[in-house]
Image 1 (cartoon, one colour):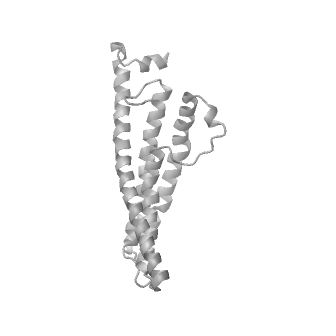
Image 2 (cartoon, helix red, strand yellow):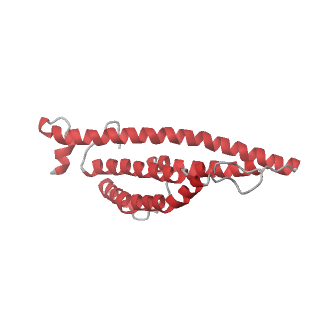
Image 3 (tube, helix red, strand yellow):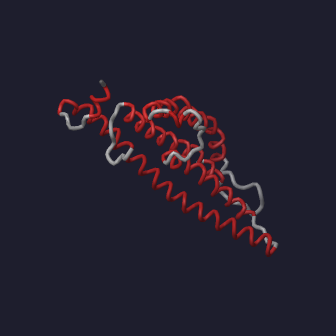
Length: 195
């Protein structure tokens, strides 16, 4: 009964339910748009990272010239790409999953698994990472941590701040995915959703 109750957008008696679903849909659209923008930024950062690695490799092996700051920049860029790109990857369902049983399930059963997974696994894990790195990051900011290596990069505290930012974005995108799955469970067809 609930499926038809929420699925009929044109029935005037369902206006309240549709309004709630439209709010969810608007939330999903805003969050997905943010993730897309960050994903495109991460794509450009990946290109920059490849160029930095290429330049560093040529300089080290062809000209025997090393640069500590460039080597640190490589892993800083990789960290940013990984941390900020996780939400975009979740949005596009690009994370690795074991699909032994999942592929044979109905769309609604998959939605239930994904919906529960957000609240039972994803969000608790992200919160745990954010909380467990808080002291580590605050200490870095307190001492204005810099590279311990001569010629290294300054401001390690900024790169360490990407940890809670990345996991916070992952939580928000997880909520968007949960909302999408809730709409599937309730039988609500999103606008522009071809599935």
